[in-house]
Image (cartoon, rainbow, N blue to C red; front, side, top):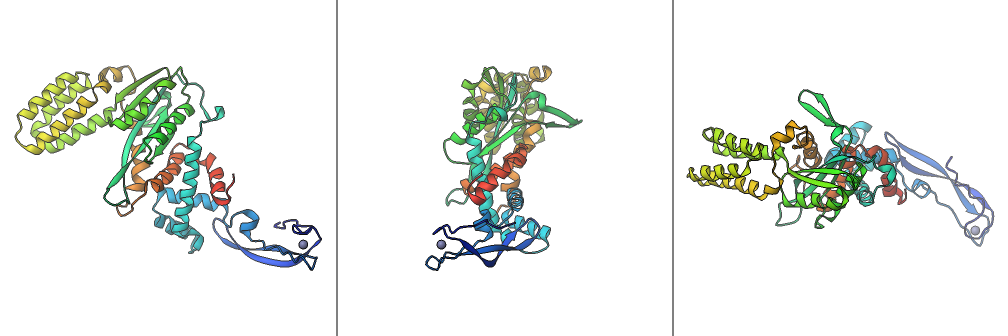
Length: 387
Ligand SMILES: [Zn+2]
């Protein structure tokens, strides 16, 4: 089956004759093979051309694309060393093709290819039917860094989905059945993530007639990404994510202790009902009644957080009653799992921005359920340089 079909010499055009076989390695998913490939030699004594076929020169690669896919999945979900040991367990043997540096290099290349693909405007076929409403959430996470003098850098991730795609799984859990998830960790003044988010929104059916609701944790770069959608849709509403507000309050409660719990609950009640000025006044009063510096500092932090996000606070009670989105609670664990599971589990692991960015592309495709449709092109491009 692996006869290259040579009839004439590519060098001089004379007839070729068979010249024995060459043994060459080929790595399938669960086993390694030695393939016998036919060699040829030129009949013309002045030419003497010989073929030296190997699996790499014949196929462009000596590993089966299915094995490359498995390596990428392992590399995206686990540390490269754990990925190596998982693959060794699956194969019941140690094999150089599953070495962690090979997994790292392939994962990187495939991630870089996926990143390029995500930058391209999606085709009409890739986009859902026009959506009346769309929710886009942006959130950030910190990844430990390799560069000296710095501790971490930020990756931003976003999810786009239509509100009717949220399904109740059981009493306490909801799930988004169809979504596009993107993530970027490059230091490029948000260029990449902005294009990723725009393309993700289009994939989920955003048109110039779509009303977009944005949820974010209040960081300026998150708003900046979301506001860049404004000229591409009918209407853009930015809302400070209630889930994050709840977290901030809990965080302050933990420092202040039980005796301030009811005061803080009362402030939170004001925020929930859209009475932000009342909330800010109460916080100032509370701060004045406390002598402890650390506690004062915490309250000031909460005050500034609300103050900085005044434009994005509204009556959450009203929104809840009218069945509109106000919290990322459903998707929060998902953003966490995307950035944190792979990049924070092992504190020893340190990342370059590009390395992290590339791995995260594979994770984002897996979360968006796009990996199964897209891995083949990316893997073939990484292995043989062409899809
Ligand atoms: Zn020849």
